[in-house]
Length: 247
Length: 247
Image (cartoon, rainbow over all chains, first blue to last red; front, side):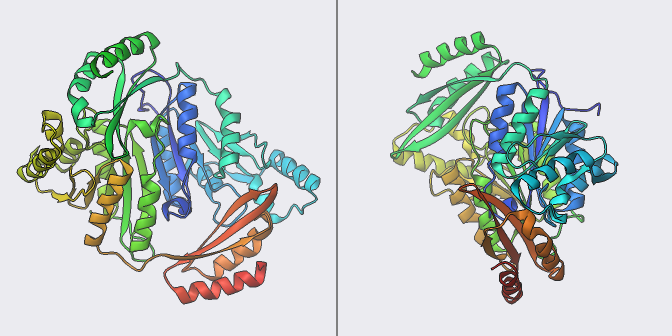
């Protein structure tokens, strides 16, 4: 764990692991990555890498071990439902070398939920109570079946509204840093026209990150110039310079 | 290169590397992954892993070398424009240990393009002619600045309509396998209700891949059950069984 990436800002670093054949086959368009990226940025945690892998035990174990060692936090989405292809909980237990079982606290939550709903608490639904030893449950206000945190790994559902609810349960428990701030300027010039002076400006502000994002609208080229950092005053100064160059 | 992942189907395998701070900060929602996933599936190439990394030289080099060794093909998006944060071409050259320069063929394409447009062919725009030694250009019918293929790595722009045009240029040059076929059944039952019998059916058809994707509509739980494979007859047989179970 000594070689974890640190972000130049000193903020905690994070990675995400998206688990699911349906993303890789093109059936489903992932939306959890974009959601988590925005939430972490606001919370002052820097998302530095995302991986998407298939529903394969060994692949998940390898990715979890690489990413949990490389970053301060790892967030996973997908594979904790009741069906045969939901294998994330077992893979996490294997990655940590701990046992996994249908745990009493999770069983109690689920039993009460299905009792209220008048639905049978069958074997498939009991699978959702499989929690690795030593993990803490993550609250799921949408559909009860919990996620869990173990070590620096936070394991959440893939269904977007449940994923989002679980992120809301977990994030307040994590120490963030200064939020990443950004300002942008939209210019009606192609990227190739602004690149030279913009690059020179970026070199003058090494603590800020500057990016340019070209677009085409009604056949005309334009560029969004974005300045990011944690010091609002420095961003203001750079934006004033930027506006003088291209405003 | 001996340890490349092979998909159980025997089809060629692929990985994708999405390069860009703007995806990880949540500013931009990536759409290229979903597009490429669908195109590869149709072409009979199995997308088995995606990574998203920041605009950092060493990070890009490491990811490129890991993924090009691990899969038959690697597709990258982002970082080949004219600005200071466009560093993908240099990172690819470093990953392959080859030189990179503004190459005559790419310069000629770009010079003619900016001449036609009546725009100055300035130093920033010349940056888009940087091509690693030994690479073959990928045609860009949208905005001329080319992508390139070197070894089994295909380097493309991040702007979605340009990325899509480059995928259309590259894919016909690659040998695919049998396309992955799929059929699905939408059932008005929760995943926990169908999981048991669905898992038993999946176990009877080891050559097919079966997945279930829950949804909530108007407050009611439902599940899409999907069967994938390359043998249409076998999928039909399994779908008939599925319909008998839940239809």
